[in-house]
Amino acid sequence: AVVTQPPKKRKKRSKTVTQSPVGQLALELNLPLLTPIKANSKVFLNQLATDASVERGPNDDHEEDLGPNVGPIDLCITAAYGQYLPKRFLATPALGTVNIHPSLLPKWRGASPVQRSLQAGDNPIGVSVLYTVSAMDAGPIVAQTT
Picture 1 (cartoon, rainbow, N blue to C red):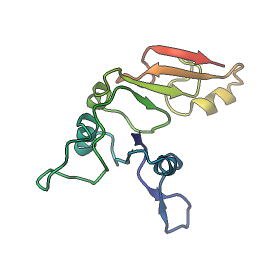
Picture 2 (cartoon, rainbow, N blue to C red):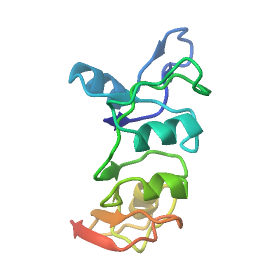
Picture 3 (cartoon, helix red, strand yellow):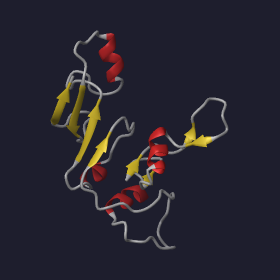
């Protein structure tokens, strides 16, 4: 399954609401797509933890229609998601959640790592893959490359 930001107006004066590029690709590849407004949405978190064969009934508490149930999940990979991930989300995948971070950690944790690395004239620049924990960009580093 693919989780991305919800559809929105992508151009300033456009009235058309469209999927993110990630969402568009997921739909083209016929992958289950979830687009929660907030990562701490109870419905979204339930969809991640509930087996795809479990159907939701008419009495389910739907705060939003996000798509199919996709659980159980083995591994979650995030990249530039842009929302704080609650502990329940992080605890859902059996093997954890890893994040692809566009800098050589630990130097540029947090927002705007690419911009800060370029402004500082870093050489080399690179990418880190790390386990996601509650603190921003603070999990154990799995791999780095320049």
